[in-house]
Length: 199
Image 1 (tube, rainbow, N blue to C red):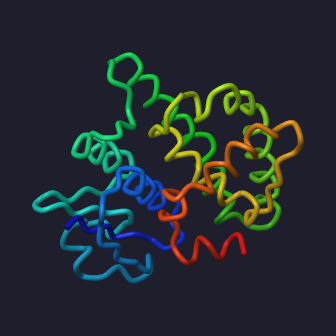
Image 2 (cartoon, rainbow, N blue to C red):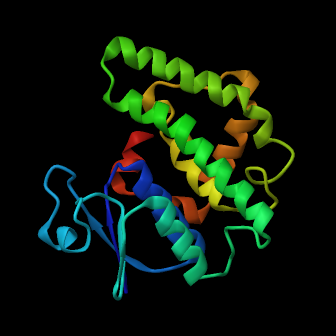
């Protein structure tokens, strides 16, 4: 069985758990305290970081590499487009979400009070500016669940606990998120600690 070393509140681990759930792939989840990574994790990943996925003789420890590996190893349902141009565009969207939204969220997590306020405002404004991208199709820029949804949904789940309320101008994002949060796959991807963020 696949083993996933995962942080209970780690947004990157959540991405991988969501991909596993969408693929219907069973995996042993090993919760990791980032301050005290277990010796077994360090045997597979010299950095001791999460997520780390171990599948037989393969150990992977970057969320993008892990999710693309899972998509190739378990091709149904596909999370990446078939043709090279569309695949490249999807990868670019993921890169931009990581570079723009994830970077602001991570800055918000570690920032002191004054800096957290500016990161919170910048993330909210950036999402609102992209609100129309969540409209017109059932999924993010797509007719089917894709790798892009697996990246954006864990971020959207964390907005209210981070003190970010989306305004009416971002109603498309809110309805998209609430609809997908209710799916069995998304619910299965959550840890107990992540559920508690919204309780």
